[in-house]
Length: 254
Ligand code: AMP
Image 1: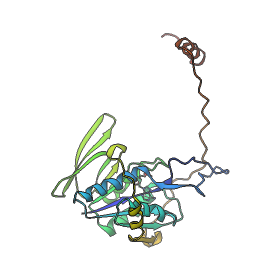
Image 2 (image 1 turned 45 degrees about the horizontal axis):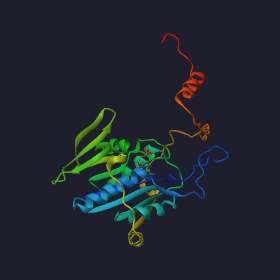
Image 3 (image 1 turned 45 degrees about the vertical axis):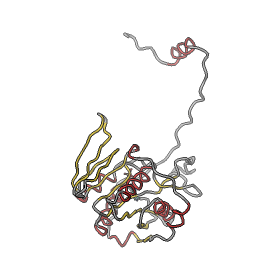
Image 4 (image 1 turned 120 degrees about the horizontal axis):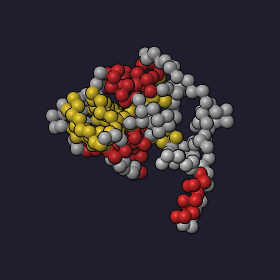
């Protein structure tokens, strides 16, 4: 079985985000980049399936600038077999990303696509669902457990939903999106980093996919959140009660 993992390069979650002076977006020059954390979980799950002998080949794909090659190399070091970069300098929103991924899926013919539930930069949480709709495939979103059946015809997933845990059996091929509790990605060893340098990384210009990209939304302005007020240490509960009385309006009738 072939498994495709879609990964997005995002600003390293431990790096302090800076808004550009003209408020047109977030500063990405001289900023440390990393694999979107939910996508790291997706790679780890694919690697675990390969270790169990259920998956034979893992292909990672990303749509982005030349710089994304570094992130794809990290994914190869995590255990993927080959990488594809769909190169574009344009920042794409989920529907355009899903349309490009559809072409890659049609070219590569995987039975399973694993993606993150959301990218931590735009928090869209849309691409997996859109890709499933474009392909007409089954989808299991926000999964915290995955079991491939031995005949490789179905996959059983546990989803984290508001009311608790939902278990679904999906016919393959399917699109799965990862939640935080699915697994804990392993550390990458130096030999794996060295090995990753020799693994294949294909770069394909986005124009070759023949996808019509549409701009359906425009970012007007980006602003940093207001700085939080400094905290205050109180000596006892009485002080806390007084403070609440001062700051919380009293609702009459209660
Ligand atoms: P989003 O819908 O933007 O929150 O992204 C959800 C998931 O779609 C991510 O966790 C990735 O797995 C995938 N994805 C989003 N953008 C890209 C991209 N540019 N290239 C590859 N995969 C992407």
